[in-house]
Length: 469
Image 1 (cartoon, rainbow, N blue to C red):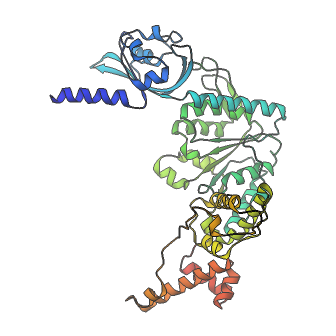
Image 2 (cartoon, one colour):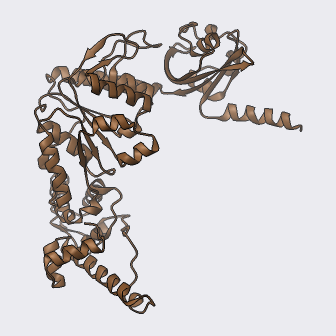
Image 3 (cartoon, helix red, strand yellow):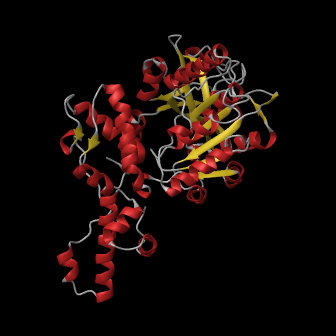
């Protein structure tokens, strides 16, 4: 087989088996390529589309609303445009399209469209927005769209770094300034955001949360800012989350996952205090406090180009860092007691404590899922323990394997190593300090008593050996 024939066959195979829709028309609007994914998306057999005029198959479109025909007529590329239309069976579908002209020299030969089916996402998003409007109206805007309402009483911990973050959040509760909360997944960012709202001056106004990573950018824009009938194909007059949250707070979760062009529009909202619906010309003034969260170090996001610097500085008026659980191990016992109490009530159990062996394993675990991981483990264990048992043991934590922060060598290997004496002493000292912290539940005073040293001395050595608290 000749090389160009093989390449042609290979290209055909790729186009017809790729999981995104591919639709190619010529300059007259006649379909010349239509793959399986597109056929499934639009609910029509390929044979009924190939070599037929586009508008014959999709009568709800015209030369202006069809992204393919628009590109053929203008020669301009279209990126990630939302299009809602009726397929051959009269069913409403929504796609996000990227459409590019096919040219030879300066002559437009046709257009290629790559389409992703977001019909279900669009339906769910619209249902969510409609439900929010209905609930806000019924409750006179005293509603949390997220569901549970948390306040500062739900922020459990006495770790110094954690308490410092809580203090900052308390001071921020009555302000109207933007807040940026950074913390790893499961560390409790949403609890901080809700506490600021529900213990603050806007407590009787809406609190609406939106995950910025959950929707394509083109859909997210409509959800946030609303749409105007005719703004794009299938668009209806619909207020967005900013209008619904007017007077209250909007939580933008995973802000670093929002597209850069949408970040620019959000920046304008922060600067000017108004929004404009997608496809609209009217500026709508809003009074919404923005709390944004990120599970990635903001400086790292800026360096990677996923977070605009100007938006970061505008959001980061009040900055809160939620420490991961591995840095607040002294809170593990307290959190365990809190979750045991909660699930005793929910699951009708009578659990008193966690066994000493399990607590020691918890103290050594690296907690990649943070407080959420701890809560899920305890909930799972309390589902498995019988009603007449009172102590959670290893057998109840099915599938749990402690992921230790580091694999330290045993004392015998350290002492008999050929390392210099100061290095051996440092390694042993660090190991003893770590064991005393584990035993004391990361209580510095108790660990100092176990080691027979002053609290200040132990704190100095913890800093010296860079032991995370």
